[in-house]
Image (tube, rainbow, N blue to C red):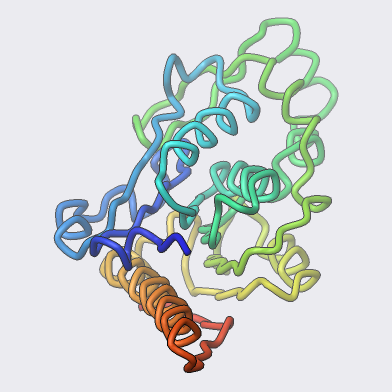
Length: 253
């Protein structure tokens, strides 16, 4: 039986989907995460350029990273990256072991983009330019209309995910509607929702505890892998062993 990286060599792989650097993990001390045995991989979805960004391109880039991982991964997505993470996890259930979403834009596709209104969409289509604030670069940047056309192909509410999931959502978020996240989580028994007194970036809630939180996940994945190994060895020698398939996390660490 293949073991997760955490159990085999003390490390666990965490691809993170974060489009514009708007969550605290992107600003956490990555070297500290490395010291604790967390292999945090962050695909750069701004490449080859931000203006031509599409959901399909991000899914392909994430899938490429996941395919290169030796074992199933824990997938982390924030904001628009959360929407992408849902699509990736649904399409690759055997390669994604767990999903963690931070302020996920679950209604990003047609419904969310329609907030621009008919005039806004017509102008975007005519000029092929929509200026949006890029949290990572700290300035307004243009997006092409192909993002809207491509986004209409995807629906987070219709996606079927089997993996255990944790969602961290700020109740004062003005970019992502907390009620939308509540409805999405309530319809799925495998989702553990944590509502925090925070805004979209979740800095106050997760900045100091992001690395510790990921360490908890890695430790639990490693423990479950070790239990499976013990069970396999016990069966080989006529013994028996069992482990729980449920391991809910604390509200935030």
